[in-house]
Image 1 (cartoon, rainbow, N blue to C red):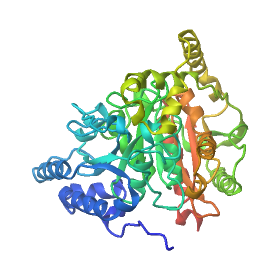
Image 2: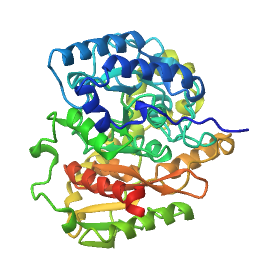
Image 3: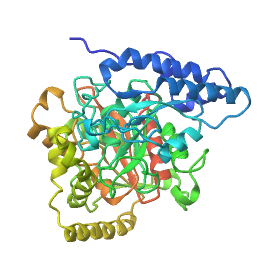
Length: 459
């Protein structure tokens, strides 16, 4: 059967950076842009299932306010009048926050999460709440009370998770960007599977207040976009000043020139069981990069695979629901939640202290290199037809999240950017990670890699 196409053919295919001057100069109106997004959602989302709640009336009301501000000479910045979506873990006042679960189907938020307030302050239009793997507890995106979201780039394969709807909506041009959450890779994995840019900021840089937790010690909120520049625009709103990262928070003091960067390739652990097509794309991108940086060499980093802290924290959050609503969870989610039930307090405290000590030593990683490169995901997005039993699904999810999770453990900034397509035609992502607070440098190198992938650079 012929697969549907989700490519946009009008201004919806523009990046935020391209759209912003058209809106600012009133060549496009926020109302017109929002109406077109809502129209496209109504046309395509019955196939994609990326949205749980479409906020049509609220979005149009916000768009009219944004347009009126422009007419009266007030421009809030490059997100002014730009439709964005939110993973349905993030609170919006008066709108359900369901976590894609029957447990929270009637849970209506009382206030906006701080990240929503920041986006609205920048003029962004919130068009809706996006589907996800239930309670963000999985890497496939297949388990949701609302059914799984569909990958618009490779419809026969998984979107990756847990921010499945966020990636699907951005890739299908239903909105210009989305917020996801990332506890083990849930921004970067679906972004890589859908050919997008996904940025997990430094731990603590972006507020997680008003966001349903999976594990407080590892949760991050960050943008999913179609370009690196758009991720920078989103981060400027989420992390600080409107027109650029605040220097004291996310920009390295040394203002490293790209040509002076020392880049480390991490092969141990991160290349185990790698698909040949993924490795080929990665190697090609590294070869192109070698001409633009000072040095590329292989390095090793500490990898802690213990899950005591994350499973214990997940159980601690969900315990309040288990006695009265345990039957309302999807069975696979409930099984994962219960895996943290019997963790002794002393064991949790010991493992949490070990995590703090490990994070305190991350500077040692960057003694001889400035940034790290790995494949984002070691395998191509699995075929949906191959994920029919829980044992197979769990095996694939562990592999899908294997390369991203270490940087949640370490709390380091990490971004995925497309670096080609594998033999199946599905996108491949390359992951760039840096020292704590080096979000600016991570995104700078991501932009260079993005440029090296452009048709002009390859010609």
